[in-house]
Image (cartoon, rainbow, N blue to C red):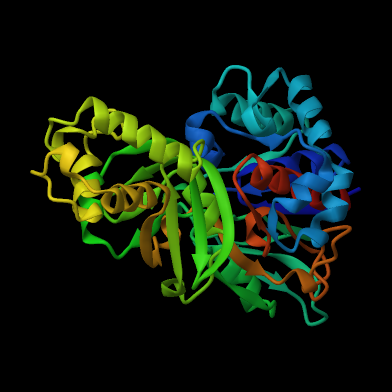
Length: 408
């Protein structure tokens, strides 16, 4: 087996592809433009690396936003259970947390990177760091014959796997150069755009809430007047708008123009309107001789109180016993329907994942080989597939990387 295989990109997809290709006896060379491997893995899950999800494959497919059916073969060829066993065998035990998310027991993303490194070393992968691939060479019959580095050096190869990631987190090396190289080779590119990204809102007073984190709230995304999706959990206010796990998930369901969307936060989702009104009445009875501005400490974080007062249109100096039934009802509505209008999403370089990429119609889903160029394969985020948070995106990277490595 004298075939020489080049893998471009030393992230999750590239490392696993290189290891499995080399395990089959090929001469495998991995090229990474950074000075170290797995830079994006290192920061995933806040440095803890939620590397898969233990839900059944059908549930995983439901959490893939774009082209889930394309991934059917990949996810069944190298399943989440296969991946957990793979890391266990490399000395990385795992644990399951809320939402079936799987993490290394150590809570260290570096352990995942080290294990992938070990896997490649065990299989004699040749690793080339600080090497930027500029172009992929093909012959007149549209068959791969090598790569050109940014130095101008040409390197011959029989097969090439593009595993360069998307365009999110460019500091980790995901600058979209693999997408550009694919386009140069004639592949159709679905224009990349941000997914799992913070949201910019129009309301200027959001700056007053910067840094405030809310837990156990329900956020509803509306497109015009129609409900798109609801999420329950944690979010945070920023100087430009809102972020946090449930906000990032909602962003994946948005498309341009973003101005047609709004979000509503239910600050007290555990209570019905009647229960919340009763709770408010009890609070107001206890504090009937206080001014309105001094009566809300048990209901809201202190940072939120001035904004609630402003939006409720109740005079802050008014004594609580003077607040009318209508005013109280308005306050209840505000607590269950705290509305923001959306201006935009944050830029793609702040997104967790990139939506868009190489058109799945031009890739064989059983092998990850290009249907246009013989000997060219794709793995990971460079393909037009993306999922919600919860370990799904890394599972996609590992499963597609496995298929590419086993079929090249």
